[in-house]
Image 1 (cartoon, rainbow, N blue to C red):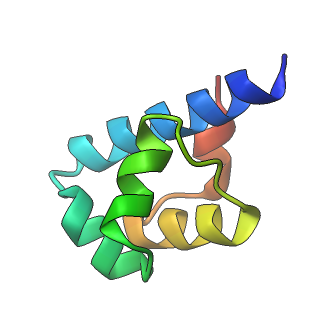
Image 2: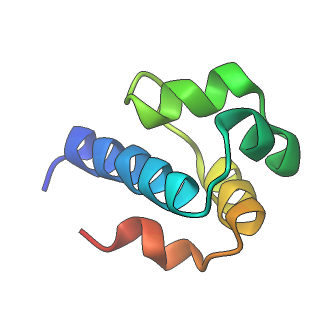
Length: 71
């Protein structure tokens, strides 16, 4: 498993969970304290989020951080 695969998978998981909860990227950005641009770029694998960003996103979505690593 390479690094690019991991970041791509995390971005996809974030998008799937976000959409499943009916949350827009804008609302996720607001709830997580991250920028809308950053959230969008994580979901399409342009930006590689650090652990702090992943924690903020998991808290904003109300899911355990390990959900992003189930692939």
